[in-house]
Image 1 (cartoon, rainbow, N blue to C red):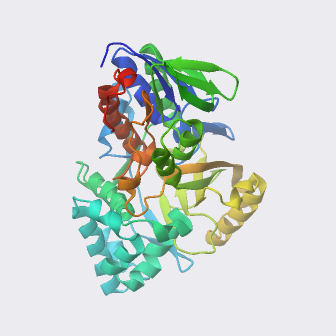
Image 2 (cartoon, rainbow, N blue to C red):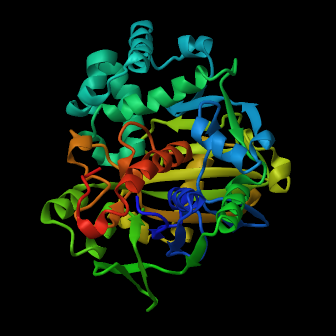
Image 3 (cartoon, one colour):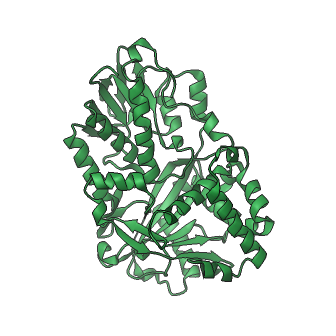
Length: 447
């Protein structure tokens, strides 16, 4: 690396913020560009009713070592609150608790053999170290092999459809492995019970502290800057939709793959094809502020196809209601394809459909208890791990000297969460720094 360089980081989510901070801490001049009016991306907060809380549901596990290290650096880790939570299932139009081993054994929808095979599937997945072979097997086929047809039909497929929609049919078994691995890591992390953590103040507090630290390290932050196109001349030239322009020695794009491909016409044809081949899952996520709690579960998994949302996430089964003005907050996520027409539905239309389903699920629910209802819409939430996904993903260092693409699609052996996002930033940093400074000579290898 040839001394201090000027970096541009495109995308002000947790990934971009962490990369910008780390680059500045190593003595570089860094400008962070974000298209929205505020930083945070999927971790951003908003006002709902009289409170400010996260747009999407997040939880911190004891095993989230990279995120906890960042919180420690920000002086926040000691404020984490750990709560023992419960997990529920809504199946056959009934609620069942699945919060411990005894409740699992009593779970009526499955017979004893089905439960045994389900438990063995989870145990087997938790012990797999080499996940690469799982990328060659469709997730539904892998689950049928280990859990059997009945358990797959009653439990696994509804859960896969809830998270992936029809895309589950082309998703590899690495997806379910990563999901199980994260939860098992939490069990091995030192806490004796399955507990989830949160920070009072939510991610607004985390993002504020991270932004403050980045600015103190010298990062210049520009919001309202949506990248229009990028060109490598003597330096990397950036043009934004608001008419502004800038240059930098090196640029890191943390934006979705297809948007990066569109903005960078100088990319090689193979790179563009790989980037455009990455498919994303979208989400409609309703935040509902209530006067009263709905039920005892932090997460209620739903296997009934008539329910229009993926799950019920009762945030105040984890977060103390006093942090939310004495109110109760639930999330009703609906995972859909990035081009699903449901994105065009208004908040009012979704409110009518979602609240009607809540009324049917929870007879004691009264719409008069709803203080606020608003929907976040994101078309590109996470990349779908299709067959042989890691082999098809383009490398972080591109064929354009000084240009790097590092985004959540590069989380190839984990699920999308803030801990994995921070870990990706820390993993990518030495790789891109090792190649920085050679751009003018075109001498670096591919990451």
